[in-house]
Image 1: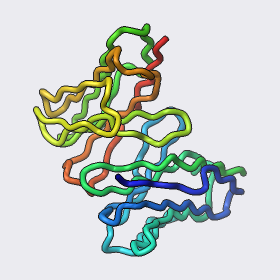
Image 2: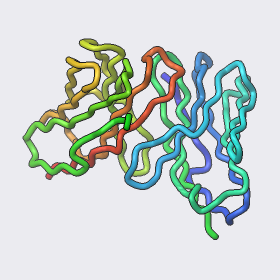
Image 3: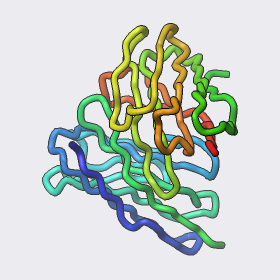
Length: 110
Length: 114
């Protein structure tokens, strides 16, 4: 089955800095690569996704890059703000199921 | 207002009792999912349903059961056979179960069994 690893597990940045979270996966059949954000006590929410035929996708301060050869994709957040503080999960998909990483806790201090 | 509702938000049960968690969606989505989340862990798939009257086991289905009699409802029963039932349970739906579609999550139910 798919093995998913996320790094780092915790990340602390100053407001305005950039943050990068990396996700590696094992199943070469994975073809959909989303990132979810979970705030305390709530359900996760999709923030950006990318498909296997695209190398990079950007939405305002958030971007995702995909390297299918190396089997990893990364979340990039620029100009971080305190409201970006949350847990972020990658969840590559092969077949019908999303396989979630263990999460990265991002703390943005002002 | 479209979305997914889960009730109750907090649930307390004694060991040995079955308990059913509710999940309802008004998004007209075909697929629905149940996940379990433990502290410091990612989400693990319990069961999923791609269409009414059909469902499949996920990675950790033992001790759980589901039904999908209506498109908008996908209740999860945590049975007494589940050895460590205390966890945060999340329900999700997507427009299609074939893969590659956003999953929309409910607010979750925190179950505590003592």
